[in-house]
Length: 451
Image 1 (spheres, helix red, strand yellow):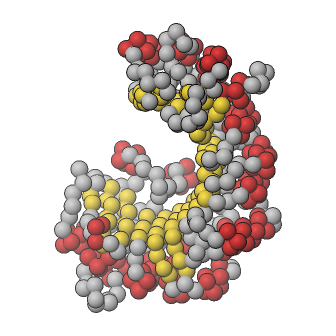
Image 2 (cartoon, rainbow, N blue to C red; image 1 turned 135 degrees about the vertical axis):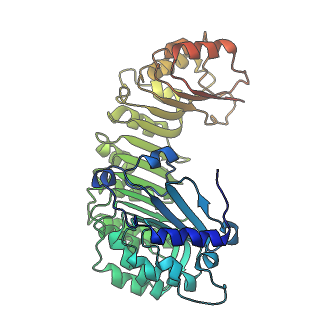
Image 3 (cartoon, rainbow, N blue to C red; image 1 turned 180 degrees about the horizontal axis):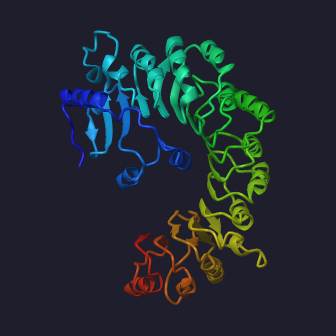
C-alpha cells in the first residue's frame, strides 16, 4: 500500500540513501542487455525484485503541487516523487543551489516534469555527476541555453531518453552540441510532441548520434500548420534517404506522418521486428510495400488508422511467418475469406490477435470460414474482438455461439483471455461458458460486450 510521507521524511530518506554503502550499484551486463529499462512500461513489483541488484532508485521531480508526495513501494524498491521546493527544502522565492538533489549520485532513472526554466537549470547542473544514470525523462519543459547545455552533457551515458513536449529556446546552442555528439549506449528514444521547440531535422540529427539505437517512439504533434508540417516532412525524407538505421528493432510512429514518410522510415530500418503505426492518414501502397520488405522478421504489428483497409491487415497476416502479436481495428469477413488458397502464414506463431471481423447482412455464410481460420491459430493466448463494427445498418460481428460455429474453435486450447461482443443484443449463455471452460482449460478471463 502506498504511503504519503511528510516533507521531513523525504529528506530523511535522501540522507539515508546518501550514507548507504550501496551507492552506484552496477547492473549486471547480462540483465542490462536483455532487459532495457522502459519508462512507459509497468513491470510488477515481483519482476523488479527479481532483478540482480539490491536497490532500485527512481527519482521524479514535479513542479506541481498535486504531486507533492513521496512513495515507498517496497523495502527494496524506492520511488521518490516530490514537488521541487519541498525536495530542495527552500522557500519557493529563494533561489539556492540544490544540494540535496546534487548528492543523489545513485539515481538511475530520473524524471523531470513541468519544471520552471530557472529551476530546471539548477536541477540539470548536478545531473552530469549522476554516474549511474541510465534513463532520463524530461516532460513539459522549456530549456534555455544553459539548461540545454547541461542536458546535452548527460546524453552520452544514457540508455533511455524521453523528451515529451520539450522546447529548446536556443536551437543554436543545441545544434552546436549535437554536431559532434555520440550517444553510444542509447537504446530507446522517445520523442513526443516536440515539433514546436525541437524541429524534426534536429530530431533526426539526434538519431544519427545513436549508433546502437534499438527502439524509436516518435509522436508528431496534431494541429500543425499544414504547409509547415509538409516542409518538415520533406526534411525528414531527405535525411532518411541518406542513412540506414540497421540496429533499430522497434518503430512506433504516431501522428500526421504521410504514407511516403512512413514508408521511408521503415525502408531505412531493415531490422524492425516490432512495428506500431497510429496515424491520421491512410496506410497506402508505399507503406504496404515497406511492410512486405520487413515481413520475414516482423514479430509484432499494430496498425491504427481510420483509413486502414482489410487488404493491409490481410497482407500482414499472410506474409509474416514470425508474427506473434497483431493489433488492428476491423477486417471485413469478405477480405478474410476472399482467397481460398491464401493462408495466414503466422498461424503457428500468433499469440495475440486484437481484430474484429465485420460481416455484411448477406454474409452470414462466411462465419464458418472465418472461424476455421481462427481455429488454425493453435498458439493463441489472447483473442480480442470488441471493436464496434461498421455503423452501417445490417453489419455485424463474429458470433461465438453453440450451433453457429463456436465448436470450430475447439483447437484453441492455450487461450487465456477472450474479449468479444454480440451485435444482436443477446446475452452470453451458460452453455457457451460451460463449453469454453471445458475445451479451453487455460482460459482465465472473458470480456463479453452486449450491444
